[in-house]
Image (cartoon, rainbow, N blue to C red; front, side, top):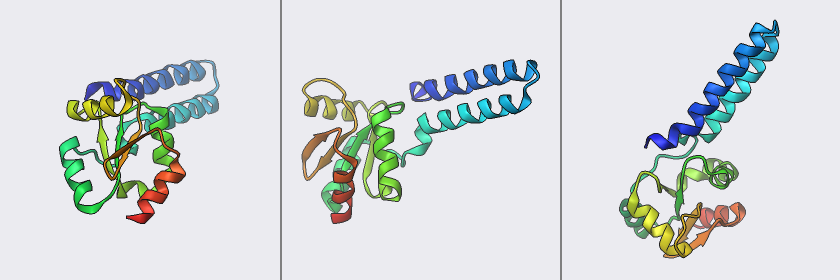
Length: 144
């Protein structure tokens, strides 16, 4: 679970260091701007922007009951963030599973992708789709 926070924490630390350098160079406006930029980057790469993750078994059970897609993802993944942002408010309709928190989920992704952990992997009706187009995922969510 800690590795999910490594990138956001590093971004915050870098932001603080850059802001401190700007502030000491008598540029408080630049310091605030850089600090704000790094805080936004840290927030965007943190697990907080994703819907609450469930375990792989629970997500499969829920998907079987309601027909909604299961999205396997991991923190720090730019493609996962792209999918999450493009889904907007519809993202909460899918079942999200963090493969770093659930070894069974990572195994599901490795099986679907031929041995690697390529995410996002979206499972719809028992069929895995690796890094699908966000518009297609939106369509799947609208159908369910």
